[in-house]
Length: 90
Image (tube, rainbow, N blue to C red; front, side):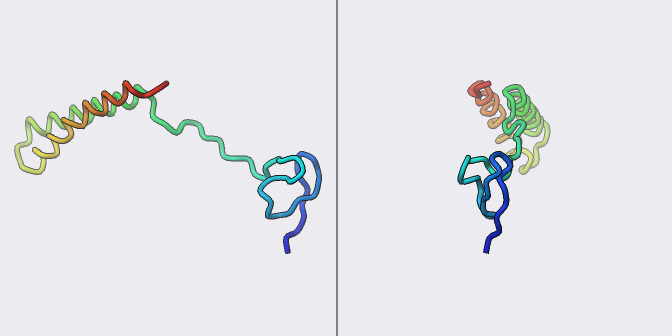
């Protein structure tokens, strides 16, 4: 059986399993504050630039098969990330 506790806002009794107070709606636990859950426009642009630069280096300088294909795909992916950075709202 659930025990009763008091609401911190209205001091009315509420069940220990209650998510919020049935009287005033005050939540039992405060949600964690999210500071920043997305990258900024500048960060995404720089990531794209770095991916392109590393990919271009691998594609131009490393002629073994694994690095050649990795460089090729990174060289293609870098500009896509850069273009995506212009679509972000800030």
